[in-house]
Length: 122
Image (cartoon, helix red, strand yellow):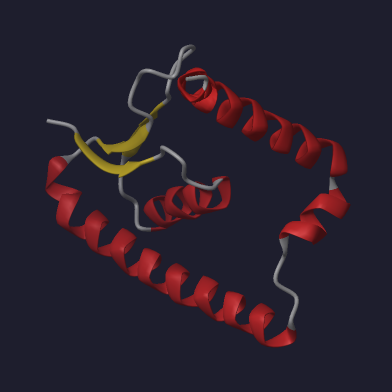
């Protein structure tokens, strides 16, 4: 029976590629499912042979620990250098997108509090 070994929801493409390569290198047979046209299916990597589940899970867990450690180190280095992206730097990089996001936030907040503004008119 197939076993889900790795969910692909919200996973960066480089991480998914690394997991695929890891499984290929260790000759673990797998197949992928995608979210489908409307995004309601389970995107993931599934094992064809359930007997390889423990080996595959161990490999993926080890990879994810190493990736987490590496990304944390990179983040700490950026923080020490003062190169962390700020809201202002993101705004300067893409001002139209940020302005639209702020407008959308304002609309949502406005629509959320609008019914309560009628209560103020006593």
